[in-house]
View 1 (cartoon, one colour):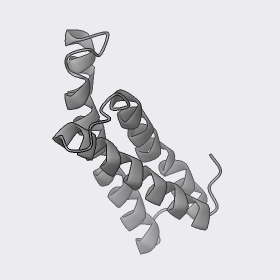
View 2: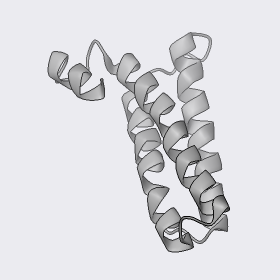
View 3: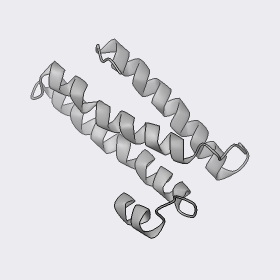
Length: 101
């Protein structure tokens, strides 16, 4: 879906909010999959650390797409704040498991 948005709107002018939402929503299943596998013991710690890079990259990209949504009373601005907070929480968690970014 994200690649479709990029093809339809290569400059990210009209569909940037939808791309940001898609990236934000995509980060969570990726994070949960890795965390569950690690907690179950089926994923080594080093592999788990590496798996955290992808959800973080999606959040960073979503935050970049939403950087101009500064009006915090609108849904788009609230989404930007949520992405920013979620990214901070993920990076804090990544530090606790020994990730470097």
